[in-house]
Image 1: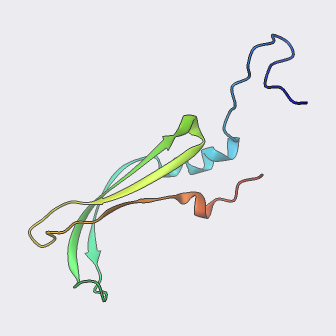
Image 2: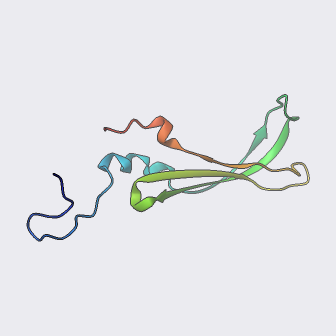
Length: 93
């Protein structure tokens, strides 16, 4: 039977994220990203101004990157959404 206590103190042990999560620190922060949304079947080519924000969540067990297009006259219907870099990272477990 497993228990979540330290053998030295009998206190609960707080789980820590794997040290490899630090490899994703590059994604933490905020960037302004001007660019062009290319023409697709869903809409025409248009200039965009985007903000990209990366944050560490859940005590460091998760990294979230969110992209937000800023509203502009040439982009009246801006998009926003999460991007999870964990798709690029193979956990060791």
